[in-house]
Length: 344
Ligand SMILES: NC(=O)c1ccc[n+]([C@@H]2O[C@H](COP(=O)([O-])OP(=O)(O)OC[C@H]3O[C@@H](n4cnc5c(N)ncnc54)[C@H](O)[C@@H]3O)[C@@H](O)[C@H]2O)c1
Image 1 (cartoon, rainbow, N blue to C red):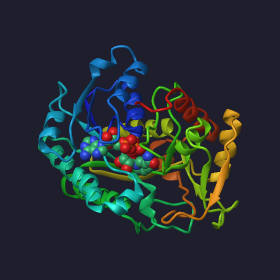
Image 2 (cartoon, rainbow, N blue to C red):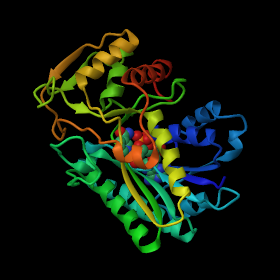
Image 3 (cartoon, rainbow, N blue to C red):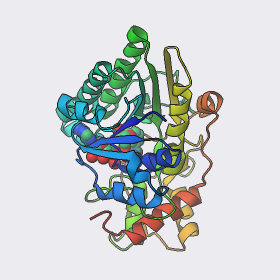
Image 4 (cartoon, rainbow, N blue to C red):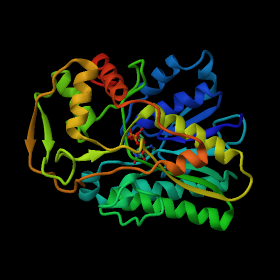
């Protein structure tokens, strides 16, 4: 199989996807500057991967904005790289409001440099990590890919701009591009060996819950119980990171099988939004550990609800999420319990 480049392959979603792609027999080059990850994640991936997979994994410590680092990555495998999965980027909404230049630089500038390197190296196929936040503050659900995308913060704006840059390469150069709009990936590989490793106090519900369960944080903070949702708490479409990783393998196969210019934009979620309190209860059921919580006022910038229409991914790729909310909880907990300090 022809080699693939995985930018940001040491990160949360990247490491799980690297494992799935090694299991599928691919040769991979990972380009990561470890700005938000540890090289240990890739050592753990190799422990889980089939024997001999280390021969098919090349790791380049480098920046996706840097042409020389990209050239090193494109030259790292014996054969030319035929496709890219582009995970590298910054992903914190609040940080993007405080540091917009960083987000435009890494998320859009990084995609631009990558596209430039792809053109230099004759590679015309890319699967891109986009986000459900491109839908802004929607009020109609489920969210369909053709709905308006008025992003409201720099993180979502830079992701939408990167989608548009890649769409322009489809039109002008006949590239094959999949923009995957992830909803809320959570959980971990069931082995508990790889998982999400946030720095400091987590912004997101799942790592927060697992840290309360582990006793690292005392009580969960629930931001708002007066949203126009079933129980008043915010609702999100959580999906298991292994389902998400598998979707990348399927999207790559779809693009690799096509000869003509192709542009697909797909939501990846389960199609079912769950409230904060539903997640707390599912976690308690799955692990037997009580999660005490306090309700605080709404947090600025949070939308009441996100829920994907998952029909397009099912129709085009034949992919749908299969793992339950309880599995997301028990696998996320297995990771946190075995690695209380992440990879540190
Ligand atoms: N986790 C989510 O909830 C979520 C939701 C929607 C979209 N996404 C997108 O999916 C992608 C992966 O997310 P994740 O959760 O795995 O995040 P992550 O931070 O764990 O992974 C991103 C990886 O990219 C690397 N990286 C950052 N800047 C880089 C640079 N300049 N050059 C090279 N590598 C760089 C980081 O070190 C990290 O390994 C991101 O683009 C993110 O925006 C994530």
